[in-house]
Image 1 (cartoon, rainbow, N blue to C red):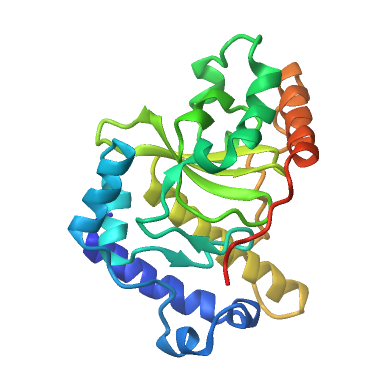
Image 2 (cartoon, rainbow, N blue to C red):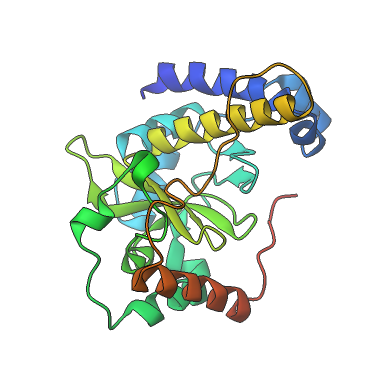
Amino acid sequence: MNETEWKAFLTEYSQELLASEKVRRRLRPEVVASAWLGFAPAAEAEIEAAEMRLGVRFPPSYRAFLRVTNGWRHVNTFVHLMWPTTEIARFHQRNQPWIDAYVGPAKDEPRLPDEKYLVYGKDQDPVWFRPEYLQTALEISDTGDEAILLLNPEILTPEGEWEAWFFANWLPGASRYRSFAELMQQERLGFLELQAGKAKKAGRSSDSPAPSRIQGKGKVPLSWWSRLIRGAAKLSVRVLPGFKSKRK
């Protein structure tokens, strides 16, 4: 997505999110009145400063997003704040124990093969991810309900997009997307489907099914890898000092 497309997308998404009373309650009155859940655009100098600090060039769809809004409020039910450029960091800088809880149990296991890893969409199961990529991932959001958004520079598209992750202990593992833009499109779709499911449950008209964050749940048997990742998720909850949002 380019800047024009992001502006249209995020304006519509803001309106859809603000139609939810639960979302409105989390926001300051002036934010609700503005009908915009973003912030001021990041200047090119701010983006370049973050890139220089981290030693990377951000993928195209994320760069275009930042030029429209330097952060975002209420990404989904589980993550409520996307970082501005000054807060973007390597995941390991703030979360090394979280990484260790996943990498440690897998360190003596064979690398997950491409035929298991390079699967996207409804056939993906979040347990089939590579924990070693957590070490180089960028953290682009606050930690919400034991969940966070990451960009993975180890998997690139021909267009220079990085793989984007919704990483959560309770999945357990990562819902992975081919780009940041694809992740945001799916988050919006998931929110709309969730609202439609609530409306249907309340007796209002809706034909949309309620979504599942676990995209491939039930499609993959509980293999040795599934057991390993589930065990790592339980370990991370025990060894880490809690996951509390920094959002005020």
